[in-house]
Amino acid sequence: MIVVTGATGNIGRPLTRALAEAGEQVTAVSRHAAEVPPGVRHVQADLARPDSLPLAGAKALFVLLSGDLHAVGAAPADVVGHAKASGVRRIVLLSTQGVATRPFGPTRIATRELEDVVRDSGLDWSILRPGGFASNALWWAESVRAQRSVAAPFGDVGLPILDPLDIAEVAAACLTDDRHDGGVYELTGPEVITPREQTAAIAAALGEPVAFHELTRAEAKARLEHLMPGELADDTLDILGAPTEHEQRVSPDVEKVLGRAPHTFADWAARHVAAFR
Image 1 (cartoon, rainbow, N blue to C red):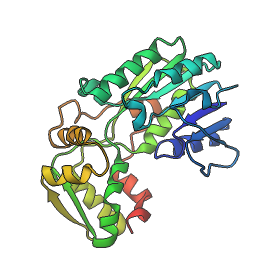
Image 2 (image 1 turned 120 degrees about the vertical axis):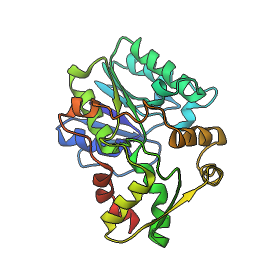
Image 3 (image 1 turned 180 degrees about the vertical axis):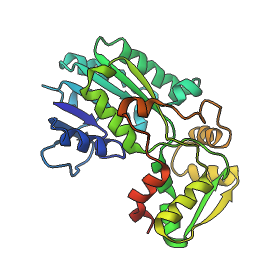
Image 4 (image 1 turned 180 degrees about the horizontal axis):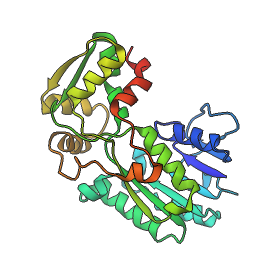
């Protein structure tokens, strides 16, 4: 059995489906009730309470931490300890590219410490370090539906953003194939793309024009603070506005694991066009 945490999100949902379609026995874990693919068991549990995780009989565990597990006093390393005590043999951790590119922020320090716990656990392990997600464009869905417009900062600054489906498929490979044990994979999309170009891709998927309006950094921060703490909003805007050379680099790791190129943002937009209609 393979246990997938965060099973109802942009990564967990396609990961659960991919594992089930491959014939694996899967337990999907989330905090709230959820629909899962046929043949998949769903269990409500909370990573903040590792003993609530249904790990008895599991051979592998996918760990996707929620934001509150990075808070002061949280102990995500306890999840690893509980997995080992339960007889889990393999763990795949969803980390972040920022562990390598911006290693000194509090969240990234904590994530790197968790990576070290995984490495030292005695389990077989893989670590995934994705960059920015294409699914963040869903923040624009309401304005595209209502006004056929996108408002975002740094309209002409690009990053090789990543389709969460690619993360899910890499995770599935790491959970089921021992060739990936000990692998640290940096995951990006196949090309650098700007917010203005993302808007054009959404417009192409819709078959209708979508206007782009560039926000100032202050305007963008005010909007982000409705979604995240101010410190994290500043951190996010630093990456979006002044990415490092490393953050703009297209990684070969998706293709290395899957034997194919990563999906483009246009691919993602075509699959999710209903959200923008």
